[in-house]
Image (tube, rainbow, N blue to C red; front, side, top):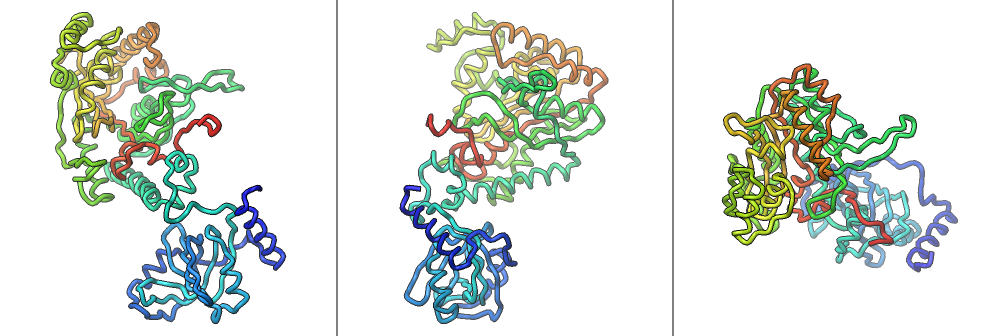
Length: 489
């Protein structure tokens, strides 16, 4: 390698081997987590010695050498502890070797735990073992890894260098654990459904396609979990959920990644009102347990997740924000009314106009948690019609700071109506809408055997993590987000 720092470290590997030291040993001496050591000796006073020895292992993050003594910072996945290395305790030869260790290398250290005069819990090294050599130097400690592209492309360096990044993914893990606990306590059962599907259903989106050689058939990465989970519900499991990846062949932005994590759940004998209560309780629990409050700061805005949250119908929200009435569904008339207000709408059917006006006028103003309810049937092919409101469905989406966080229905359980809506979707596909849904005969076959009244909901867990961790981009909360190839970036 041409990098002189890398060459120097490779030479150290050769030197270690010449001394009979394996720089990558196969066996690791017994050790304990650093946070356990810190917790156990947390009551030590300044300059007090515990009289107890500890064995810790971790990555060397910093070293401060002062003649015949050095202080080293050792970190594992649970925390950081200081190591005191002294020639009079280790011996000159061993002390020389520990001083030759590079930042980034891994060590195992054994010694008595004490607290320094400055109050730092420290292990007085009596012996150490070399565990692994880092060939490349870490990013500079005081500057960290600030290049956003590099942080996302080389997440390992980001996690090493940035405490806030590690904290984000710790919060994400806690979020998943709490979601499962809350749903399990409510009697939901977690299941797994196919990722590769013969028909991409359950949402309006462009799928990724692949080919199965033995079956000689095209398969699709799932765009939603819905249709298979409903088959489980039809089979008699009344409360079911799945947390898993979905894939949509769409653009990349601060809110979109083609591979994302969804929670979908279905509850028999419930409706979209029950789903509103459930998501208010679930999200409120997450903020209380992870952040400590339901009132939080997010990117300079104060958000209040204390229920109940605001509720407004979709067409009502559009009329309020834009002054354009859509209730008659007359495309030509809507376009004329918009034109009179200086708004040029694209050509297309009613659903396209609804999406355009909602995205342009409503979404940006949805800062506080808000349920947008009662969607037109044309854009909700899997939702039950709203009683007494022709052309509307019992559906809501939850928006926060302009982002859709959750989508829920009183699920359509009339198989005749469902078939008709699938056929309407197929006509939209024939008209050029490549995101329209397809007829799924296997799902219809299951539904025709009877499906109970059901409330269903999908929650975007990546976006929810953004809110819980005050992250501005979805790339900050996905360990390995989609990026352009390095030679194209």
